[in-house]
Length: 362
Ligand SMILES: C[S@@+](CC[C@H](N)C(=O)[O-])C[C@H]1O[C@@H](n2cnc3c(N)ncnc32)[C@H](O)[C@@H]1O
Image (cartoon, rainbow, N blue to C red; front, side, top):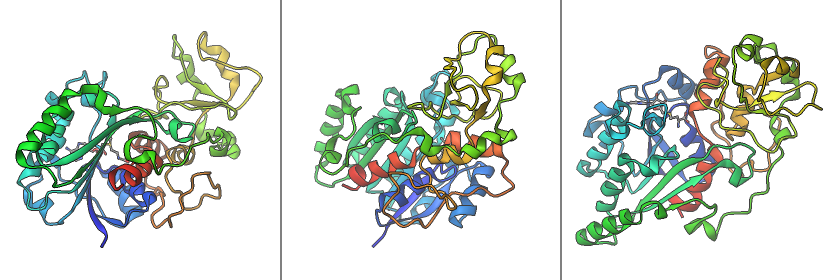
């Protein structure tokens, strides 16, 4: 029988696509997110509108009614970042996750599988500590790791924290307390940074790097809507742009600011002209004006994030053996900049699929 899942903080459904690519026999019974743009895209692709009630206000019935045995979570990352002042559990944006952790032991249907994605540094947070305490006391085994798509052969850096927890029912209540205490005492040593690790060691395939050119549509070089406006470039005194060419080995993390005037730290810009000039992005901005700098298109970013694209003629080396029931498309009501924002907030589907397949359901 298919595993019944709930997807919390669903966005455009990155975890749902990851579950699909993993090949695990599972369905997502309900998703939860309060961002209406994200929910519009989600409904367009999965045919079901996520519940838009704030997760911090869900009650036991809202969750128990689905009799779900697997929870997928990608809560907001700001509480654990410099931008969010590292407020951790004190940040109102952490409330949704904390609320779910408090509800979990009171449910009739406590999940037996829990999967969470977040930014690097979540492993140092009070939220993570609380999560280990709740899951440990309920008898879960926990795997935590930091993985970037680069480690799996995808030329995009997106180092993220993942937790995969499975309830084994093999420990007594006393043993659960002891297990949790000992697990927490391991501190950072509990977090794997190599891929593959633990249960995946036996089953994960090696990952040769795929060339970046395979992810790029050369025809997008002529798309004026993707060109970085001169005003954005000239406005900067200190540059430090990440400029890549199709022959580069990697791209940097695309964030929710990608495609806007916030050029620094938001994601790579693609150089499409004067390819003999290799720029490091430092120095005077005028120099960059004739390099044909453009943003990666939503399609290219989705490809780097390994979302299945319905009308994509390109086949990547990791195309899933699994049938694609749900692909990613954007309704015309969602503008290009909204698409990039939603993609910047999302995740790498292939990394999730590998962890779900080899660690969560190993
Ligand atoms: C990091 S994003 C997750 C993105 C998602 N994994 C994807 O693939 O698009 C966090 C999401 O949580 C949603 N969110 C944040 N706080 C929420 C809350 N209290 N209740 C419901 N949704 C919330 C945001 O709207 C956002 O879409």
